[in-house]
Image (cartoon, rainbow, N blue to C red; front, side, top):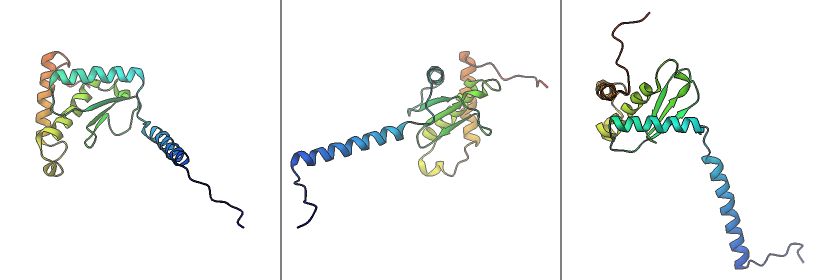
Length: 158
C-alpha cells in the first residue's frame, strides 16, 4: 500500500488550478509592465504640452509616444526609440536647452524614420544625415513661425 493516494481530479479542481495559474501570470505581468521610466504628474503634463506643440507644427502619419523623464544622463538630452516609436526627453537639461528644442529634434528623428524610408533602407541611412537635417530645419522654421521657439541667435555669446 502506498503512502500517497492520487488526488481525484474533478473539473472543479482543474478549473481552480487554471484560475490560480492565470492569477499568478497576471500578477507577474503587472510587475513586469511597471517601467522604470514611469512619469509623475508634472512630467505627464509637460509631455502632453510638448506633444500638442509638435502636432501643431506638423501632423505626422504614424502615432508616437512622448515621455518626459526627470533625469540627466551624461551623453544625451533626449532619444528616439525606433522600434517603439517613443520619444524620450530628459527634463534636467532644461537649463541648458529648451525642452521644445529637444522635442523638435527627436520628432525630426520620428518623421525621418517613419515617413522617409522603407525598412531596408533605414538601416543603411545615418541618423543625423542630410535628410534628417532638412526635416529638422523645416520643423524648426515652422516652430519659429508659430511663435513656439525663438530664432537662432545671430551673434555668438562667449
